[in-house]
Length: 389
Image (cartoon, rainbow, N blue to C red; front, top):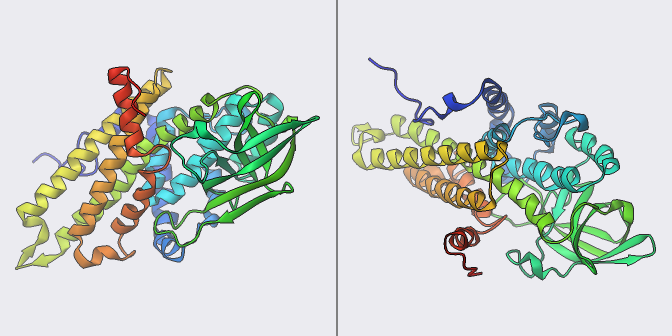
């Protein structure tokens, strides 16, 4: 009799990975199984970010993983970074969000838009987890229209004076630096702002029902003065922050696959063990139809992200392709998490099981870094050539 397929990888997508990529996935997977899963339900319940995990995340080379070794980073390819996101989000979206922000939204702009002095000053310490970053783009009046930015930076001699506010900022209250995007007389520019600078304030957002194991903050800038040496010199305009978001969204296409796999595994185990009307719940047609549909959708998402990763590593990835995968894969995961919660019955509403936690977290993931509607319109614009925003 032939061996059964892996229910979390029906198309054996793992066989399409290189040995190095499989090693990365296995290493991060062990970390999640041994260190994250035993504590993350309590962290979510308590509204606590597990900061004690950051040193090991750094030691594994997961921060800024695709940046060259010259800067103290691992120099991995894009698919390996995607697998890191997938495994971390199998643990919790909040943990993946921490790594995404540090890697794609803070280290990447310093690497891509900074000068050599800035790269050497910050990147090795950020890779080591000694300097934590946050990314200030979204503002209180709205996140889907970054061109309508109110935060401004004005030149004053050899310095810049920043005023304004940013909202929904992951890592804000634990960050040592903020990558802040502000309007200047010469267009939107980015600044590396140490969070101990006079006039900088971070205020943590409480009473969240999503990403509870993550730090979310509002940032305020009241005549924050930084020298011109803290400005990212190699980009101007919206392409700076949007380039960072493309990198982060790429990782987000992989992350929800992990969340969906965690939910499906939990539902498979539960329905095998749960006996109703004298037989396992898994023997019901209605349950098998739901489980089969989950496996179908996870398989499609796996293939979508793997091809996106191969395009990225070939230098051919386009933002519209990222939008399609972010839209598809987060929608896939949130639907599966909600369905698994239902399959678990009353047990599904507690953090003893992961489905409700993933479902709530994914409410944020489907909103941040481009809402589902925004990504649909990006694809629509590509198809028609007409901007409907």
